[in-house]
Amino acid sequence: MSKVRSTVLFHSLIAALAAPALVTSLSDAEPKTTGASTPPTTIVLTGTVRDFQERGVPGGHPDFQVGSSATHGNFVHMVETTLGPDRKPVYKGNALRVATHWRDSANRNICWCLYDPSKGDKVGTTNMVGPGAVKSKDSFYSWYNDDLNYNVSQPLSLTLVRGVDGNYIFDSQTDPAYQALGGFFPIENQLFGNFPGTHPPRNFHFTFELHTKFTYDASASQIFGFRGDDDVWVFIDGKLVIDLGGLHPALEQFVDISRLGLVDGETYELSFFFAERHRTQSNFKMTTNLVLQTLDMPTASTAFD
Image 1 (cartoon, rainbow, N blue to C red):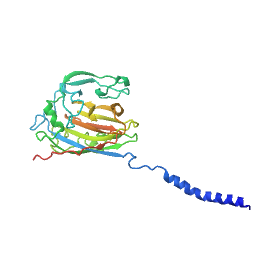
Image 2 (tube, rainbow, N blue to C red):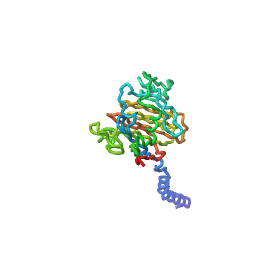
Image 3 (tube, helix red, strand yellow):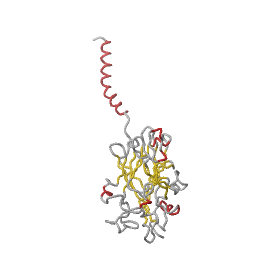
Image 4 (tube, rainbow, N blue to C red):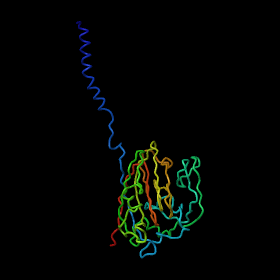
């Protein structure tokens, strides 16, 4: 065998022996899925639930269990379009009752303040001016503030479960704990307790306040939606994006986050305000692909001293 041929065979053998090690090294170098990049399967959000007694009983609140059907319906413009300095909704009054809803090109209900005809949105209509079954700005203040004249409060956590479509959902109609109760009754037999006038007795009159944060991703088609009753207001970056005020059956609105003029990669606050003010139903469904995180720990005022 020639010296040249021996040299070629030697280097071929070395290359063959090295090849498996090279493949293993390339495999190890492939990017790994980390906890930070893998969406969580559930999201737990904690806010403050405040319990009220209905009007007509000692200590009852004038805005809860308002009976006249003339005051019922979805009222928009009940609150200002920006949060107050205390990060709470500001009652405006002179609200407008909705006759037909503002809708996007996919026929989803949207907030009137996000209406954009250039995107194919359909304009809504109103048919009445009224207070939205609210006595005054002062009575509204206690909805989302601890006031021992009217309410007691405690923390409330909701678990949103990620579906195969990537959306996180909490739905009182399918969540096992609430499904067994027949609706969204998060303080059943707690705080002021259940009202005996319903069959079975339920704790109907309460509010829920939640402050969260998320990172805007312009490439992710981020959305937020809610369906329920009664009043619901959602603010993103302090600006109104869902307006479902008033005493009404379950209604829904949808927010396309890309409409809000947010900056890609920046973190924003989403503030959520809910009120259950009237028997005989309580529904709550939150849907989003935002990876929300609780921003503030809630206060609690269950003690009367």
